[in-house]
Image (tube, rainbow, N blue to C red):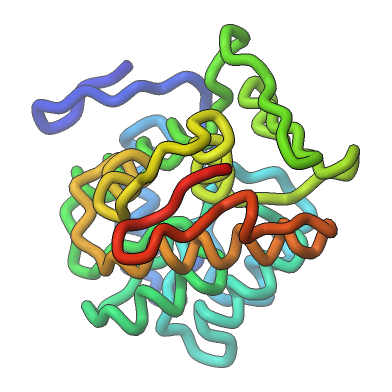
Length: 238
């Protein structure tokens, strides 16, 4: 655990972060923020370089700028998601809901609007790592609808075949399968899964549920029976 700006942050290992931004001053600023907080940091100035680094190396998190020339953040996010479920935080200078929703639909796990405070960035990174870590050996596997979900290894299987989920998709599925019949409204899910005072659109939840259902369907599962929509309220597992 380390202290920064009056707040405490936990540090269990040297997480490796890839910063992707075409602007050298921003890359340097983020590198200083992260190294000062004990993260291992590498940087890339463009999408092709970043994708190559991700395929060849091991990383725990991506900070991805949206507005880049040649290959923008949308395209890079889509390409990363084609081969990896690594947590992605999008960096955007435009505080527009449509941009944020687009990033989440492409598979990003969170976003932060420029300019941002160092403390907010670190808090969001810490929250994302905390959500993606195994819960510990005391939490049992959950089996339902042909799905086996193991919180100790953060793995999900459908009839024995692995399903690749983002950290937030995993948390949603685990929440629904271990609390069957309980109805969750969108506000509560944002508070539970995003773990911060989230100010985004409630459609963020709908977007992640939609993506989760699509992945379940690809494995031959009846996604709408597993995660039921409660009209006018939210969702429940069944």
